[in-house]
Amino acid sequence: MKNVFAALVLLPFLMAPALAQGAADAAAGKTLWEGNNAFCKNCHGRNGEGAFGPDLAGRGLSAAQFQQAVRKPWGVMPSFTTEQVSDAELAGMAAYFATLPKTGELGAWRVPLATDAPHGQQVYVSAGCAQCHGATFDMPRASFGGRKGDFALMKDLVYNHTTAMPKMEPTRPGTRLRMGNFDPLRLSESQMKEIYDWAHDDLGFRPALQARLVPGEGAATYALNLANGGEKGKGLVASGLVIDVIVPAGITVTGATGDGYKGVHTDAKGATVAEWQVARLAPTDARDFSITLSQAPANIADLKGTVRWAKPAPRTGPNMDVVNFAARPAAPAR
Image 1 (spheres, rainbow, N blue to C red):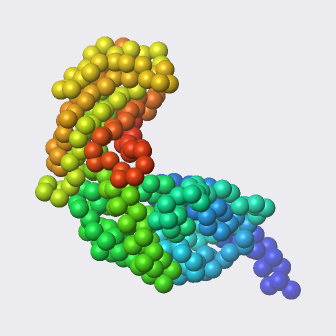
Image 2 (image 1 turned 45 degrees about the horizontal axis):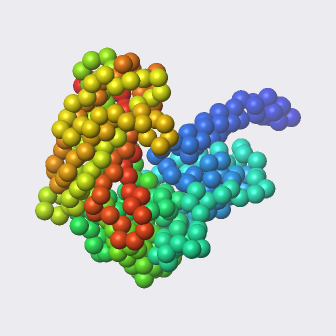
């Protein structure tokens, strides 16, 4: 009887660490889910309500069930390795979803399937690729355009992503690979060839353009660097480039530098735009510009812009290709 009484007295104290650990796991799972190191929410919904992928909130999945679904998925979903997301992190996600109520209705796809879209694009959206890569496959098309990528490279990147991608582009410090490895039995080579042909033949690959806007010398001066990150002798050359910096309302442009500056104009939406034009930018080439404002914007990210180019252009349909950029704080001194 004394032993039973002692056990009852100790029970709350024995349970406390377990409950605290569970709460910590759920909080860590929520942080990982909502952050930028995992894109699971693009398919499963911001709150696990489901969309392209099934709902997860309130399903009562155990940590083991959740791990099994991620390591050996049953659908078109790619598999994720322990290097990408650990078992403990997956257990945290399962604990987080256990705290959420089950939803009664699935959310909308981030990129819906358009029945009048080209067949290759329909295959691309149906395979789930568009939920992370967007409707027109922009970033991969730039990566392929920057190195003359072929279908063999695409197959390697899709089926063996966790080993092939680091060879192509080093993972940035503090980030992790967010795409897993697709199973050829779930996403066939013939389907992938249709996606590749649509991206290559219909849209065409993009030049690997990068734009960076950061504080420069002076309180309200910003340095803009435009570069073609493609491989020399392989990457696409961009021609007929137009660089626009959209100035926040209530602020004026007091100065600008860089070849090709065309001055300030008002765009169709009534915004003030500073514009540069560059005839040609080959792989490894770069151009430097600067813009000085009457005052610094309260939020630096409100200073943003676009880069467009005339060629290469999509082989079919209007030219909607664009690189968007926004000002970022200066990097801290090392």
